Structure formats: C-alpha cells, structure tokens
Length: 150
Image (tube, rainbow, N blue to C red; front, side):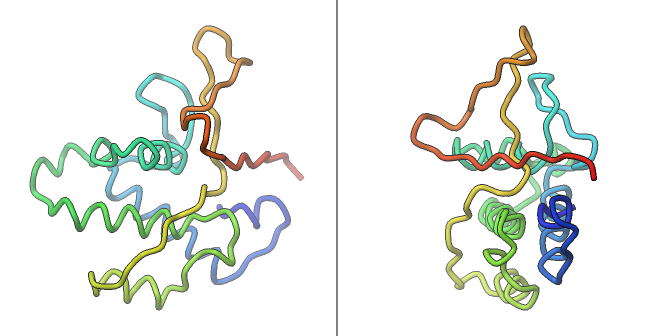
C-alpha cells in the first residue's frame, strides 16, 4: 500500500505506480513484500531491503537465485532503479505509468536518482529490539514513516 493511502486514505494513479514498483522489486527478488525478513533475521520489508542494497552498491545480492546467471546485469539494475523511482514516499516524485513504459522500452532514457522510499524501517538489533541503528551511514538521510491504525 502506498504511504499516502495508509496515512491519509488518499488514492490516485500514483498509488498504482507505487504498487507496480513493489511488484517489479518482488519479481526481481523472488520474495513477497508482505512476508519479507532481512537475511540477518530482523523483520523488515522489501522496499527497505532494496533501499539498503542501493545505498551499499550491492544490488545484485537481491536477485532471485533461481535466475542464476540468466539475466543481463544492466537491465536488472535498471529495473531495480525504476522500481525504486516508483516507490518514492511523495507521490508527486513518482513517474507516471507512461513514463515507466518509455523507460522500460528505451534504455537510452536517463533515470534520475531515487529519494528514500516510503516505509523505510530502521534495523533493530537482535540483542535489544528497542535499540535501533541506521544501516545507511552517517551522511545519508532516511525518511521513516510511522504507520498507526485508524
């Protein structure tokens, strides 16, 4: 669910873009967003996991092992990039579906850098679940969205 729908009940065509971005990331990773756990055992979500890998320049770690080596590295990284652009926290920063179509079918279109997506969770330490630490380094700003029930 897009952040604007969860926090204020607003829904638009950009909400569909958010869902499309999550779907793209699920396909590449081979895991569902709704039941995602970090490799270290902490509970997170797929968007957070991908964002951390993006910041650590280790995107290829997320690729579904079932794909083995049967993929074009540049195409997969471009799809991850597009997926991250689709899950931007601010719906105005997300591309339109027509823009997504053009970027998927034309590799010469330059993509801008994504901002932190909505619903990025901090990593919780195994020893103390209340203690939180950031995985993105001291100079990186991360947007944390607090979700509370209606």
